[in-house]
Structures are given as C-alpha cells and as structure tokens.
Length: 336
Image (cartoon, rainbow, N blue to C red; front, top):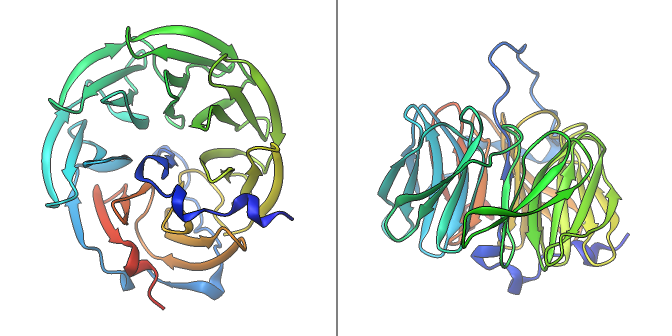
C-alpha cells in the first residue's frame, strides 16, 4: 500500500486546493434512515467542539465554496447565496437565486458559479466584485447530487444521466466541448490538468485531459462513489454504497488505499486541509482522517453536518436541517 500517494503535503494546502463536494438531503417521502455506524472507538460528542462563529443561512444551508477573501454558502427559503467575510465574520452580501442551489458551487474566473435546480436546470454566474448575477446559463446539472468544477480555462459539469460532460468557455458562457463518459457519472473535480469524475452507477473514477477533453482512462473504486476531493497527487472518493473512502494515486491512476470511516448512505461531503482529510454526514457531522496512515483519528457524533470546505485555517460546516453554517477553527479540532 502506497501511503505516500495519499499524503497531504503542507505546501499543497492553499485555499484554492482545499476542495469538497456535497450531496443533497434525502427526499421527504423516503423512510428515515438509520444512523451511520461510524467508528465508535474514536467518537466524541459534536457538542464538545466550540465554533468561532455561526450564521443562520436560511431554511436549509447547503454547498460551500472558499475564495481568497470570502466564504460563500447557499441556502433556501429564500433561495440565495451569502457571502461571508472571514476577517470580520460578517455577512457581506446576499445574492437572490432563481431557484435552489442544488448541485455545487465553484469559484473561478472572478466569479462564483452556482448550479440551480430550476425547470429546466440552469447555472448562474455571480461577479465576485459586484456580488451580482452577471450571467444565466441554459446549461444545468444532471441532478441534485452533482457538482461543478473549473480547470485553467474552462468550467466543467455533467448535464445528464447518460454521461455528457460539458466544457464551458468562461469568456462566452457557452459550451465549447462535450465529452462522453460513463452513464451515471455526476461529480467532477479538476486537479493538475485532469478532470476527475466519479461514476456513481459504475463504481469507477474517470480521468479526462483538461486541455483536450480526451478520456484518459478509468479506475475502479468503492461502491457508489459520489463526492470527491483532489490534491497532493491523490484523489479521494466518498463511497455512498458502503461508507468507505477510496484513495487513488493521481499520477499512476491506481487505487492505493481504502479507508473505512463508516459513512454509508446519501448526503455527506469530503475535503482536506490542515494536514487532515475530513468527511461529514448527518449524525456524524465531522470525521478526521490522517491521510499519511489512512487512520480515522477522531469522529464527532451528534446532530448536524452535510457540507463543508476547508479554508482560512478553519472548517466551514453546514447543518442542512438547521439552516446554519459553523466556522470551526483548525486548532479546535486538533485538541486532544
């Protein structure tokens, strides 16, 4: 097992690299699911953590993205995204949306890109200088458990269930290329010239050349991979089928480790920063993993959780049902 391939180098922990992807809440008519098993021997109460700040975002709080000078989080009732100044912990702006942000946020090309589950699905572009919507794109996500990512010159998103990965030109806000990947693939993330897409229905991770759009190959990972994060020459997928995390060596494009934090089922999120890999799920709002040993170091249990990002030396964690966002300083999570 090559642990080095999954190590998070301290020099790679820039805000822009600390990425995550998040899922939507289960439908209201579904039966209540049982609490995830987690790793009981390392669990402590979530209430033992003391956030630096908290905000009421809306009826629900969902999807977070970090920029060099802000934290953006989406909410519903009303549908909007809020911009938070991490220096003052004040809400700097609220931007109304034409529908619920349902499939991820991304920051690139001076803008926040928001996938919106209107009918039909769309995407809006928010100018980060003016905090105003500067464009509305007719292209939208395949569903509420997808995502959007950015390479050096394009925005990428899967737009249907048959596996159409679209490449959007940020200069014109139009589709410049379509790439066919496996059906049932929904969540992309870009890193070091490759766009990685998790194949929820096929249990694979696809690699697409961000320069040419060519499919470079696929890697078999755990069951029902949904949300993923890339960095430090690794890609991690959070597998909803069995609650494991797969670690793929990004250069060799090979599975090198399987971590079992006990986080199965819909929802959840994964990110890294501050020397750790982090995950969240309802009832287990926060899990800390050492990426050099693949060991689950600590797991906080209790109400809360659903989406997160790492940046500004803190974990930004939503409680979907309460409609809140917490700012959890890194040093707070590292206390013995």
